[in-house]
Length: 282
Image (cartoon, rainbow, N blue to C red; front, side, top):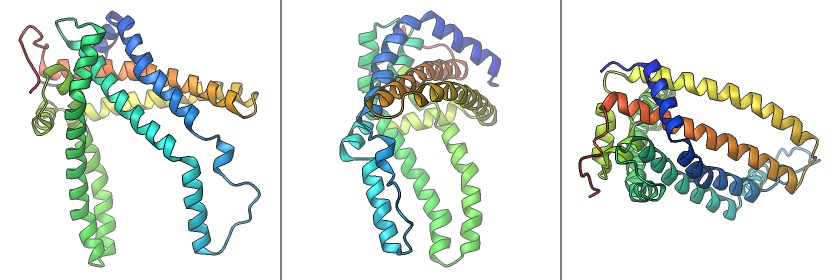
């Protein structure tokens, strides 16, 4: 089936409109609140960068300062919070897809159960895809670099960029496959996503890039407005709170849109969901 961008966008907006109340609940709990908590747990910007310090010519001292700044920017508590937030958001995203596409019209609780059950398959699929990409990069870049063939390694780096993008497009339907088709085998999930995107990779890439461009432009405009507001507040906890609220709202809103987009892409490429059939995990 040839992918139709206009149809996908119409389907996405229709699904979001029809399910906006329950989507707002899930997005608020699983995206806005974790984002806000992460923002508050991160140290203030002025504490990350040392002030009024002359640059050092000692390489060892420079590395030590960089390590110190990294530890200040990402203390253990903040790193744990980021990991937890990422896991919570993965559950929430799968739940959003289940709400959008399951013909049985699940409750929020049932959708969250789908998200929880799908978390481990999602992690497994992502790790498997990441390991495969890393292995390919080692073969393409690491071996020539280790052999002292710097020019070939540089060419391979350039070649790896479109390859990486291609793989990401092919793996883009992992979450819908888990949420809608109820698959739990990471290998089967990756194969299904690869099959669904077959013959439409270029069109999907163009669609994703167009949406990313719109996202960037809107984020920049909102960022300018928020920047003007926060500039009047100076620094401190109040600034972090306001920035966190705006960041959380923007992230939650765009996540809802992205969930609708992915659900619509899956619907178009896989056909209507078969929620009337009894599909179970395992």
